[in-house]
Length: 344
Image (tube, rainbow, N blue to C red; front, side, top):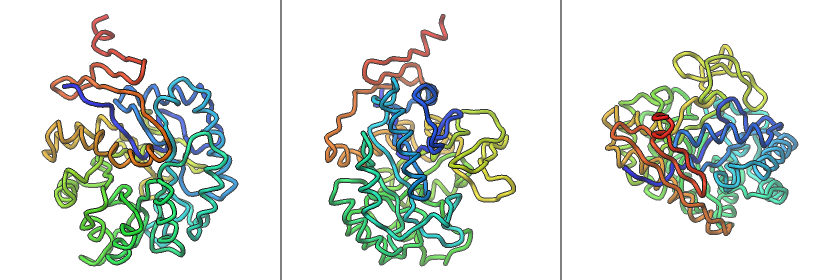
């Protein structure tokens, strides 16, 4: 089966490299992107999470310079995803994001960061219910950026208002939430029921139980569902201690990533081709639907922001085996032929 390349809208690091470290080099980035490419991802949005303004500046500047100087970065990384700091600081909503760095929604912070970068911030995840959230959503959408809801307690009215303002996506829906919510009147139901929102799901069997994921995707609909990884530095790496955005995280043998002694998850170690195989193995989707959720559906959300920024993605193509293993990957003028390598 031949398909377009996979698109990951939320990736914080990969294969031992933390995109949030503030010390990314072109060489290290190419190694991480090479590993990501081997998982079928030909386009990704490197994601910077909540931090204080001076930390955001340091992290974005280092990442942006590394991408510009790398071999694969210009092909695979058209821009960035800023996840925070405009999130809900309430217990259960923060996830692993530092609550003390969260702030009211301010357009000038995004504009300031955008102005120093060679590649644009294409996507911003925010909580529309916080101070200034809806106004920022409207301003970002008008500027052609993807507005996503995440780490949010937005109720039905706030979710509708966010969609009215131009929000088009739910970030890792089902996560970034307290363990206990009102049984029906909650932000999960509000976002599932808003047809103008696509939804990203982390299909690692850890963030969401496979049976629950089946229900969530059925409720949202295949046509509005996207597979993402929310991968961190530990993705594609061995179990052990790593550092993500200035905090230690442990990759356990079961594939979960947590802060030491913590119970909440700190991103994932998921690879996007594994997510595709997972939803097929769990009886949630056909191979064609699973690949579409990780490619064309994600691209449909991303496309308006690319157009607004005047960015054209290179052509890409994947060749899959009947078992959904990658045989060949092409992005631009770069090809990886795994079948030929195996034969050699």
